[in-house]
Length: 231
Image (cartoon, rainbow, N blue to C red; front, side):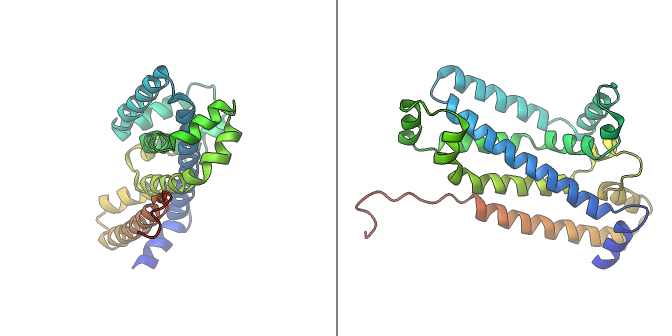
């Protein structure tokens, strides 16, 4: 049954599952990079009062945007693409879908990035500031190893959310691009229960595997204090 779902959604005229996974992979990569960037920015700003206020406003704005219905988010992205500023080669590709999906889950990488910066050891951040090494390179040397696992976990979670995203996908889907969201609605409309069941199992399996990997990667190593290793 799952094989039938894959064949029916990955054959001509398009590849629904393959397109969904490809878009989800790009969304996950963008979300992971955003998490790293926010962690670096938050680590540089957390020492100042204005920086903390800026981070709170950024998090609140991302949360408000994420809570918008997917139809509105997709319509906003589609409207921006119709302004004529973006070349048609980009507006007719999967880029609008990637932008819509990233905006739908933007709160997650921003929140985790701020959490990573808040959990950084105070001594490490103070040492960077005392040495004047507050740039991205110095941050990457001292804090990136601890932030890499959670950032990859965020990317996997956002990839799963992208594959499950239906509302905004239908608003920005360009002609000729097949997507699992469109297939799901077609199967639901024509009561093709076998394909719907197979797609449900596929999405459930992807979600379980992605969630398990995200949990494993998000576990931060415990720091041992001197003299407590043999207690």
